[in-house]
Each structure stands twice: as structure tokens, then as C-alpha cells.
Length: 378
Image (spheres, rainbow, N blue to C red):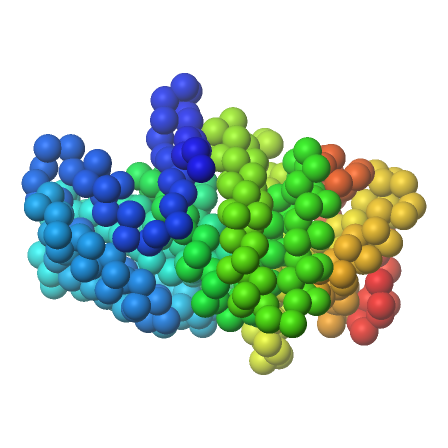
């Protein structure tokens, strides 16, 4: 499967590499040596993927061009996605005497890549880094495009940078061991991408996910359908890479990638405050349905769009019901990092594959949606 490049002004600034073997990340690392041999590599990883990190370490040990200088495991959770963890990573790099020539390799889901990328972008004013995303959410969204960040006072990704990794290495076979709920969290981001830019992929993704939901043996379904899944991941990565190449720093088109996310981040904040268990992808799924509802009520979409998304998402096994009244989301939405001068850049749908930015206040969005969404089947 062909690599995908991200460009800035015609120059390649990052690359997305595909393989079915996780150890094949070693040649990609070797290409980053640039005559500096051995390349000092520091691995920061989710402790749940230590087995894959050991495989990478073993493959790297056979290379005369790389030196694995240390491995640092973290507990990847929203609670730990803070500046404190980033400072711990930086402290470990200092303890290991990592210099400006250090190369950070982050292995794990979006929380891990966000924090490791943030640490790499500020340690000694920036060192090079790359990602091995091990969740569907990270492979289709979080590990692509250069956004890094941590949470601040329950607000999602309030502190961060935009800085591109040297490469993102995508190995779909690692998803075969991913817990099903985590896989479905990424499925929401997959559908989000194709709702922004379709070309037939949205329907294919819904069909694939519906088959997975109904499968007697989901792990066998993932294994048998590995080629189809990798095609979906490749298509989603291509969409995001294209958008980022045209608008790296989110001044225009890249805002479209936030479809459903303004609602989702507010839902996640409420969940943390109430001690509820809602994943990012689940919140995004609910947020996209709310965005479709808002699209109809704002006159952007014809009636029926929300009904279609409800049917598709339910078929795929994704949640669609907001557990909180919409007026309880207003404060968090107003403080969203994408808000400017009191206005939020809401991403609204006219149809799958067609979205537009509509600026409005959180209060107006709440009024359009109504305040009766608590436990309402929307």
C-alpha cells in the first residue's frame, strides 16, 4: 500500500507509512539517521503495548544504524493527559541525557502520541519524533496532522502545539488485539472523516462496521477482513493528509475535521465531572448526531439527514443519545479552544461528504437544538 505524504508549500513535511508487520518501522527509523549513526532513539509508549515495543526493540537491535537509548511507559488515560505527565517525560529525557539529536518514537493510542509529541516539540526547543499508533482512532485521526496537546482543568487539549512527526507508521494488524470498545471509539472518527469527504467510503465503512457488530467472532472478522480495514484506514488517512497539506495550522479548511467535536468535548467534560465512563470516540459519535440535528434546524441540511445518521450509527454499533441536557454543555462549548470572539466554528453537514463552517454562539446552538435532550432518543 502506497505511503501518503503531507506537504507544506510543495515540500514533504511528514509521511504516513503502511505495513502489516510492526517491526518494519526499523527501516523507517534508519532513513531518519541522515548519516548520524547510530541514531539515538527514545521510546515513549502506552504500557498496554509493551509487547509491540519489545518487537520494535528486538528488530532495532539488529540494526547498526540505531541505538534504543531507553523505553518509558505511561498510563494512557484522560486523567493522566496533563502537563504533569509531559514534564515527567521531559524529566526522563533529561535523566537519560537525551540531546538535541534525540529521536522520540511514540507507540500507543492518541493520548500517548499527543503527549509524546508535545514533549518532543518543547524538549530543548524541539527534537524529532515519529509515531506508531496502535488504536484505530490514532491511525485514522489523532496521530496524523501534527496536533499535540494535553487537557487543562477538564477542558480537552487546551495546551499543545502543531508540529509534524517525521512519519506515522500504521500497522493495521495491531488492531486485532485491540479491545472492541476501543476499536469502536476509533470507528467514530473513521465515519467522521468520510462524512467530511466521501467518495463512496462512508457507505463502505458503515457496511464493514455493521458486519463487525454482527460477527460471532469479532477478532476473526478483523483478521479475515484485514485488507478491507487497511483500505478504509488508508482512505481516511489520505483525506486527513490532504486537508492538513492545504491548511496545516487550522485557519480555514482544517476546521472541518472538528465535525462533532465541539459537542464531544463538552460531553467529555461533563462525563469527567459526573464520573461517567464515555470514551472520546463515543462522544464524537453522539456529537456528530447532534451536529446533524443542528444542521437541519439551522437550515443547512434537508430533513432526513439526522435520521440517516441515526440508522447508520446504530447499525455500526455506535452510541447516538446525549446523556446530558444540551444547556449543560453551553459553558464547555463556549470555552472550546476553537472559539473566537464568542463565536464557535460549528461544522455542519448538508449531506455525507459535504460540510460547511457555520459560526454561532453556544447559546444559539443550544436554543436551536432545544433544552430537552437529556435521555431523549434523537
